Structures are given as structure tokens and as C-alpha cells.
Length: 144
Image 1 (cartoon, rainbow, N blue to C red):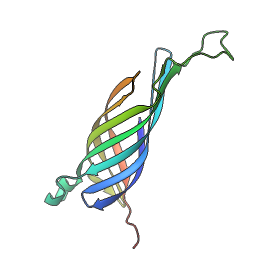
Image 2 (tube, rainbow, N blue to C red):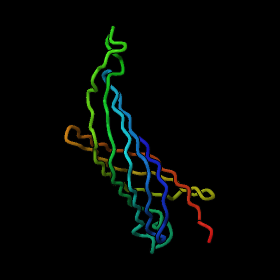
Image 3 (cartoon, rainbow, N blue to C red):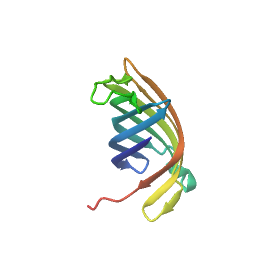
């Protein structure tokens, strides 16, 4: 799973952006993958305390996209034949929330661990996803 977004800070503790999220799962001869367009919001609720507390944040992603699952190994003799997807979500909704810490800094790059829960659903699909990982952000000031 990966998410890439571009945004701007309205205040030191509030960030908005837009981006794309993608995921791919494989197992038992099937591949499920999808892409979602998303709106991204980050809040640093303890920013005013300063010090290390300012790097603790909460994010929310909301958006829509599509998830399709297909067979990775097609049955023998199926070349050129139309084989229906195992899952086709059509338009799917997505919401995700995470808690992160951006405490490691080098130049304009900030990085740290995160924990998140992401949920994608449609009339034919339900995909919950819990993640623990590492995030990296590049912060740059716009010239006035």
C-alpha cells in the first residue's frame, strides 16, 4: 500500500492536500489491486506545547476509487478468452485515519513511524486494512 499527496499548510498545525493511494494484495492465485483519489488532512493537536510534542500528528484520508481482483495464473487454454474479474468494486469509497510521529529530521525531510486503519467499500466489496509503517515527508516553504 502506498499514498502520495501534495498539499499545503493553512497553519503550523493544519495541512490539507490531494493525492492518490494504491494497494495490491496477492494470495491463492488471485491479485487484488486498486487506486483511489483522496483528500488528505493532517492535524498536529499538541503543536503549541512545542518540543517533541509538535511532531505528533493525526491524519484523515477520504476519497473514492476502484478495486479489481483477478486470477494471477490463468487456466490453461484461456489465452485470448474473456475471463471475468473475481471482484470488481465499481466505484468504491475510502476512509483512513492514522497517528504518526515525524520526529526524525534531515534538512527539509521529516520522517517517523505511523499506525493507521484504512477501509474501502462498495456495494460488492469490503476491504479493511490495518497498517504499521514508516512515512517520509518533504516540507518546503513557498516563496512570497
